[in-house]
Length: 144
Image (cartoon, rainbow, N blue to C red; front, side, top):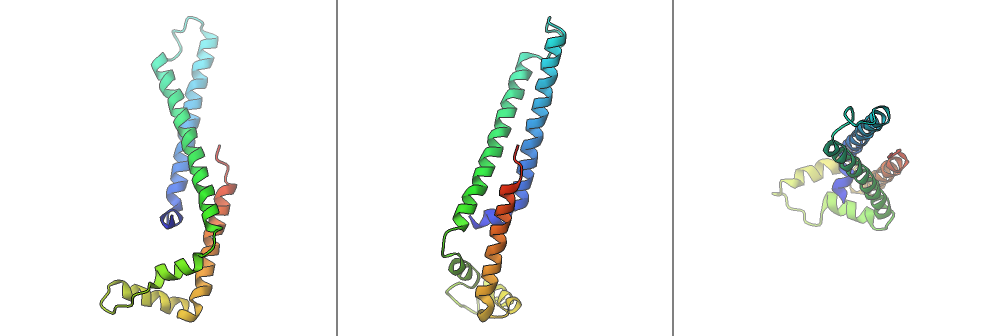
């Protein structure tokens, strides 16, 4: 789940792509309907296989949008649960301190940047609040 919070650009690309596909398929299907209404012989309209594929694309795009929005809602619910500060501190600093561990220099750099272990809980609270704000913002986005 934490990986979902670090890559909201992918969510944006997924939403934009699904919307483009959905609107494009709707445009093509609208063209088809207008041509059918104009020319009842059906010669100017699209082939039925093309129409079927466009309808399928429209359905897949709609499903992608709804699943992505549901995923964001799950993230909101998960972030509402307790214990996040302890988990974040554990992820960041870990339990084991080994000076030979390559991760140790990163842990030390983070500790130096945030002001040491005394400021770690405040830092984790700010990060957690930013995650919650991001998810809240995504839930305000228009998905259709």
